[in-house]
Amino acid sequence: MKKVFKMRDLDCANCAAKMERAIAKIDGVASVSVNFMGQRLTIEAEDSRFDAIVDEAVKVCKKVEPDCVILR
Image (cartoon, rainbow, N blue to C red; front, side):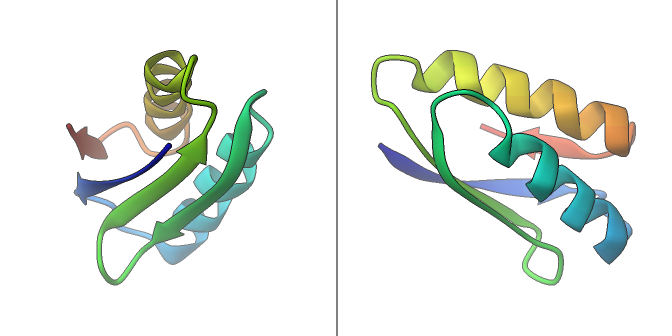
């Protein structure tokens, strides 16, 4: 499954890169892209665990940039 999520308050391109690398390490993630300019997160992952993977990705993003919000 592949979904695109809007992001709010992503303030730094370096933080976006850190998020992308960390989310890519989550088990079950096939591909991930964090677009700083477009404020978008694209995740492609296993259908059966997709919601759990997204929850984990949200936690990762909060660690990197606490003000960043992923809109679902």
